[in-house]
Image 1 (spheres, rainbow, N blue to C red):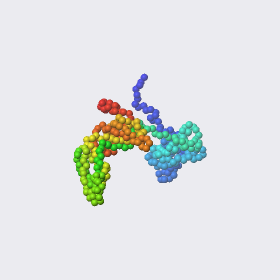
Image 2: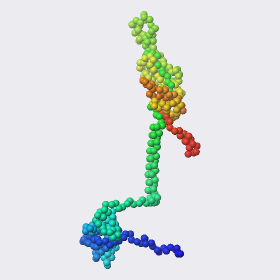
Image 3: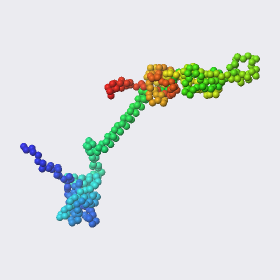
Length: 389
């Protein structure tokens, strides 16, 4: 058996017509080269074009003419406006071959229905033509799966960049949602918090006025003068005078005399606040200065809602951030007490011992405190770092 391939053999599908041509009674009307109306008989018709007899009209290939194609169906006329491009012209026989240009989908459906019915030997009725026009006889073109081979390098880069941008935006949105849900269900937030240090109060020993002697840096060594005070001699001797010494003249004399004294620092401290301004009158026992011992480790006081009772027990690790700092610190709750209202406790006050010492200069700054009770992932992070990831 000879299995040799003959390269000169062409399959019939490669040489067959694109559209089947049939002979259907129809007429064609158009304007000739000199704008004279011409009516010709259609020789044959297909979905892609037609042929008609033009006689001796001076037509040439390549020209485009607008024409009207007319059929007779059920004794009714059916007309279609078409554009024809002349592809061939035989001057001896007058036969002209044309190709349709810019056919509408409804015109294509009508032509195919007429041709198919004629080939099948069916009788075409106007109702069938109208039903054909009402149907959607076309489908969407199939997508070409070329794997991006038809795209330019710039187009591929643009597509990859857009996809990466969408992925990043989606990832950020997913992370934000996860963080919000995690913070809602697994993190307890304090209602308020501040840095606290053990302080000392300097009070007024007598009724009188105060004049501060504190340096600009607010640091006072132990025994250093903090302020001077002036008080009336009458106030000093009150309770020590006898009746014969309380004459009006004596009282007026004692009232006009002033006695001065000095307030000193009981420790190496920093003046946190001066509560009485210079020259202002203060009563005995009024707090003049609030002092903070130097080199004292500060703690954090925070207030939580009572419904967070189980999340702020002593020994619970917390994280906090001090106002004015960017880093987040960690610590542990060392005590927990309740703030009593009229009837029952409504808030819980906790004291937090920081893992790293806090400078006493931070005293009074507001703090944001969070207690994370979610799953512990430290072991997973340590394992990943140990593996070098």
